Length: 291
Image (tube, rainbow, N blue to C red; front, top):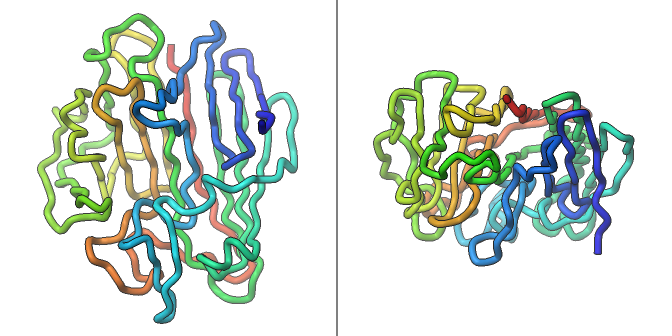
């Protein structure tokens, strides 16, 4: 069994699994769990790292320069063993580099670093996508944390909401049966800036903002401790659960599933960014417990 890396502040404790560099536990000073219970009846994930794709490629295939490459939903990083290159009481860094296995589905050199840092009531997560090659690296990246629904503070599940920092008047993308993005859009379910959480919102999979205007949301009951989730570097956001599950995922993305039936080049997909030769791109997420 993989040994987790644990970091602490005076307010929070986080445990990260080197398998996938996945945040697996986030607990408050009273040892109350803020993450999913990972009930296998619904989903056993906790907070997978999505790289080098976000969402489902059409027919589990990406295309580069006319050649098909096999690629599973959300990419391969979530199932890969990361090296722990730095760890102390408050911070830890995990690294994944390309290999023969990764190049079979994604023919590029890369270095993916995930650094988790706790300071007070805030967990900072910073991803660095580094390109060691002398050609451009195309990539997508996303976070997929699953927070406890309800949070462990005695408020009813139905009292929980997600409040956006900005007005979000745009329509949402819809998910096709194969997990790709359908052409149809649907009206926003927000009440003002609030998403009032209920199971029936997720009968047809995730809610997908493909051009989110907010760079943070606040999750929880209006009269209890809440989580502020900031995502300053990602232009897309997914919110997802399975009806009846004890979690809700707030997913900042720089990338999105393939459009339904897409067979074009991976580089031309919405949300794919370029990392210059010898350069890097940083994408951060911050989770703060607001008492």
